[in-house]
Amino acid sequence: MTARNTVSTIVNPVGSMRVLSNREVSRLQDTSQKGLHRLFRQCALAILNCEQEGDDTEEIMEQFQDFDIRIVQEHRGLKLELINAPADAFVAGKLIRGVRENLFSVLRDILYVSSHITEDPRFTVESSTDITHLVFQILRHADAFITKQVPSIVVCWGGHSIARHEYEYTKKVGYQLGLRGMNICTGCGPGAMKGPMKGAYIGHAKQRTSRGRFIGLTEPGIIAAESPNPIVNELIILPDIEKRLEAFVRLGHGITVFPGGPGTCEEILYILGILLNPANKDIPFPLVFTGPEAAKEYFEKIDEFIVNTLGEEAQSRYQIIIDDPLEVSRVMRNGLEQVTRYRRKHGDAYYFNWLLQIEQDFQTPFDPTHENMANLELNTELPPHILAANLRRAMSGIVAGNIKEEGVGQIRAKGPYQLKGEPELMEQIDSLLQSFVEQFRMKLPGSHYEPCYEIKS
Figure 1 (cartoon, one colour):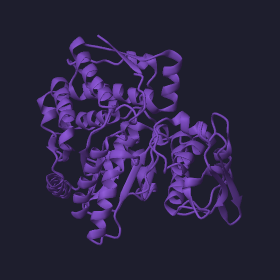
Figure 2 (cartoon, helix red, strand yellow):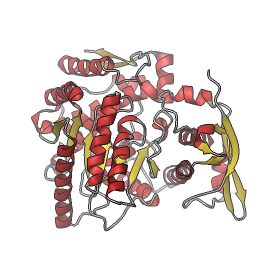
Figure 3 (tube, one colour):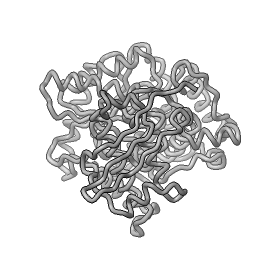
């Protein structure tokens, strides 16, 4: 294991988290299972390690096993003590401003979510309305809502493990979006999450847009493998992947999807499953799949999978645009204008999509144990939006087995997940996943990939 340079220092607060109660401090310093210290430490390390790109959570934690973070509680407020933190997060001995802001965003969201899920008896995960309300509260607490701003947030999905030419293409699309006044929201990591932000940043600069928004939505299970990129200026941590995905579609006004792996496929299945719900039939939601010419085969494979599993109605909910960043920006701009007119007509908020119906199948956290993965109902006789929910869970489990600390540990202990279902459907899934493997979309380029799943018909 290569030794890494580290720094130990005291960090002053920035943003809204300047004071904590004694109870909050105790929870953050509690190293027991019920405490928040382990979670806080892992997320903080991911923030501080943002200059390094990697997708192995265990390796990152091992490299900085001596890292620790402690609360320094004073009468005038709080400070953070960083012990053996990655030196790349510092310039001339001072913590980079953006890193410091994101560090206190972690503190803000971990405490808020803990108090509203763990300690609030009024909250129940059995209620779909409560789950949506919690997502709303987390976003509001993070000051993510600009109430009078017309729809302008484009969510960009895509893989962290993409080729250089694909990354360059994401920047070109982001640039065109930025020139047209659109803001960017991504999963906050590298690759297709970083490229659109970088391009839009230049587009905003040319238009002298001084308050461009680069929103990063993440969750504790994946943040170490996909550390926030340096462009993110609004970082928000949701408690799990399901609430993170709901935050994307409630906060965002349109979605652009770049090439990726199972995580991107999970996101595609999530939004299609929601749009296929009959209750959402008339709600405008621009959805574009795009990539350079070399990615044409990738999207043809995705398109084929969707048609063969979810049907032509699902196919009608998106456009595929190859190697044309300008056309992507035009389609998205026109789509956002439709969203604006629809929300104005129906009295829906610009800043949060209340009218979109999201069923509990898409909201309930899925624990990717071997038993749960094997018991997934994968059958084309299911209603398309329900099948989409189960396919999403399968992809979520594969993401966990690939890069999440707990999932990787389960695969090591019990072997690959077993996915079972209708033979023809399983062939479709196997073919799609195999194409991801062959195109090196399961891990970062140069990394050897051992499948965390087995397909059984």
